[in-house]
Length: 162
Image 1 (cartoon, rainbow, N blue to C red):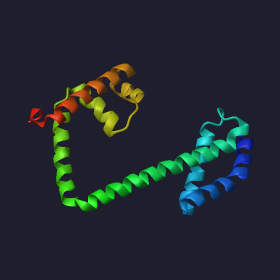
Image 2 (image 1 turned 45 degrees about the vertical axis):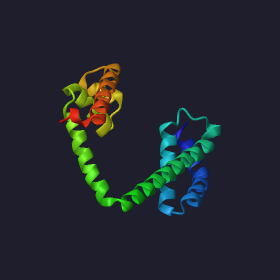
Image 3 (image 1 turned 90 degrees about the horizontal axis):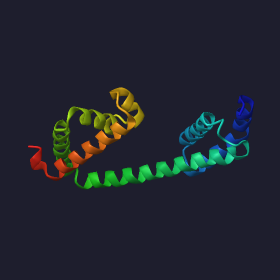
Image 4 (image 1 turned 90 degrees about the vertical axis):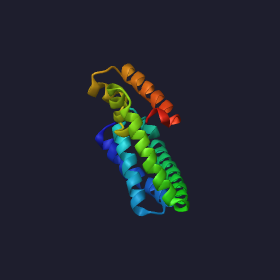
């Protein structure tokens, strides 16, 4: 896809996609963000998208984003409701849980602790972790699997941590 064709698609499809997003979000700023994100994703995959399916692709991106936002909002509402019913208990339990989890992670061998923290706390991909730690992707997956198994056994039986 050329830059000219992409700009034509922006001119042709942006208004319709914006109206679709606005109708679903009822928020002008969120709708604009969704449209911008959709066109950004289209540009990133510009060489992989069939010209006849660009409009459908854009609507699908916005639709998926709306579904994701609705799920997050529902989870957030459920979480807030749960917090409001037992704020102090949850706060105390979360502090204890964090302390227990930190102690369990400290019990892991160094390499397992590093890969788990990079994956689960920092959000790196297996490839990125491999590059950081000089391991193959398969080794990273094995270390993460073993670390999670160890953590699971430690957290099921907290006496092992102490």
